[in-house]
Amino acid sequence: MAVMGLDKLLVLQERDQHLLATESQLKAVPRDLAAVEQKIAAERAAIEAAKVEMKELEAKKKLLETDIQSAEEQVARYKTQQMEVRKNDEYQALTHQIETTMAGIVALEEEELKVMYAIDEAKQRFAAAEAVLKNNIAGHEERIRVLRERETVFQTEAKAAQAAVSAARTEVPESLLKLYDRLARKPGLPVCVPINDYRCGGCHLKVSANVEMEARKANEVTTCDQCSRVVYWES
Image (cartoon, rainbow, N blue to C red):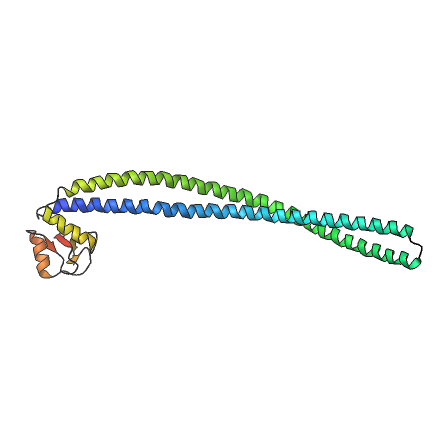
C-alpha cells in the first residue's frame, strides 16, 4: 500500500465512519426518549382509568343511596296519607303504592350491595395495579435519565470526532480528498477498501485482472471497475 497519501485517506475514512456512527447514536436518542415517554404516558393513563372506574362506581353508589332515601321518604308519606283517608279503596291503593315502593327499595338495596362489592374489588385491583404501574414508571424515568446522560456523552464525542475529521482532512492530498468526497456521497462509505479473494471489499464483486494488477503494484490510486471505490491490495 505505497500509494502516496492513501494511508492518510484511510485515517480520514476511519474518523469519518466514527463520526457517522456517533451522530447516528445521537440522532437515535430523541426517538428513544419519545418511546419511553409514551410508555410513561400509557402507564399514567392506566392509573387514571382505574381511578375513573372507582369514581364512577362511587358516584353510582351515591345515586342509589339518594334513590333509596327518596323512596323511603315516599313510603313515609304514603303511610301518613293512610292515616288520613276514610275510604277503604283509597287505603288499599296507598297500601299497594307502599308495597310497590318497598319492592323498589329492596331492588335498589340489592343493586347498591352489588356496587359496593364492585367498589371493593376495584380498590383491590387498583392498589395492585398502581404499585406495578408506579414501579414501571420509575423504571422508565430511570431510562430517561440514562438516555439524557448518553445524549450528553454523544454530543461531546461528536464534537471531538468532528475535530478529528477536520484534522485528518488537512493531511490528505487535495486530489485524493476531492476523489474521496465525491465517492463518499456516492456510493458512500467506505470509500477505500481492500481487495479480498480478488473481490472489491465494498461492492464484493470480482475486479478485473487489470485492477487487481494495478492494486498489487500500488504505484497510483486504483479504483474498482464495478463501484468506483478506491481499492488496494492487502498483503
